[in-house]
Length: 208
Image (cartoon, rainbow, N blue to C red):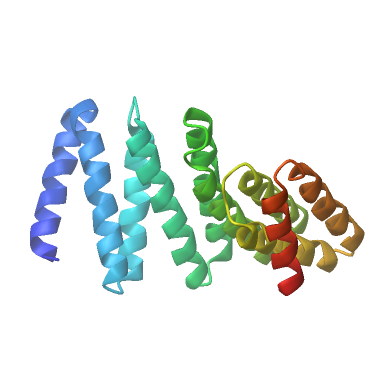
């Protein structure tokens, strides 16, 4: 990465985006996203977050975002949520993870079946982030949604069982172990039409 060259290029794109946002804002957003990811890989977490915040704002300003833009934004927000969490900024991590989930939900509605695994992953992380900031009921709800989304994908029995265990653990921590078990049985009932997958989930649950 050439910091001077990157800085000059970004400055030029900022000027162009200010003059003609419709034409150049998507290019600025993509360049800032690349800058954020590159700085993260280089160990510059602070620089990555600064570029990421600016990139997310640029994506949000695109008047007619495409699916490509939303996929890039969702992935960026998801990465930023992890960076915030790794730096101990739990409130920022929870908020950013929630933003990522919202974008993934939109993508899942726009293209059903294509973004379910990413949405489930984002929901799982959002659940853990919410738990860390004390939003425990919301964390449990997010964990439940993650399982529901996975059930609507071709996720493996192991993946579904892991998500179920995460939900059961949170339910147990909240003194609602029976609710966790009821939910697990409901998931198995949903899979009754796919006996191979149901057996895979039950086997992975028993083997954990």
